[in-house]
Length: 116
Image (cartoon, rainbow, N blue to C red; front, side, top):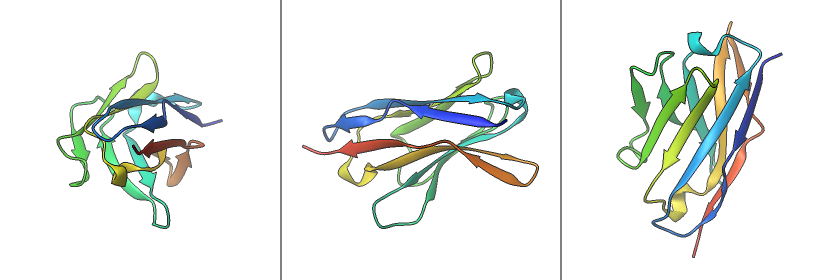
């Protein structure tokens, strides 16, 4: 039922930008906060950004604050992550997440590699 499909990852040089998208279906998208997580090589999954159901409030990990922007389009059932000034340490698999009825749902992930 619940489906989250990420896209937009790829290889980018340090200082470059990417925009990730997450297309959601199977639930009332506008009623739920959405989150982006990432998992860096050899490390645990970490929360990157959160946006409330209406988009009125956002939160970011300190490591990405000022560089990344989370947004959503409730008419399109899509949440975005704009990533600017990318650094090699941003290299990770990025996952879209929603918590619904005490269950976490995840997309398949999209690989972001920042390298020269």
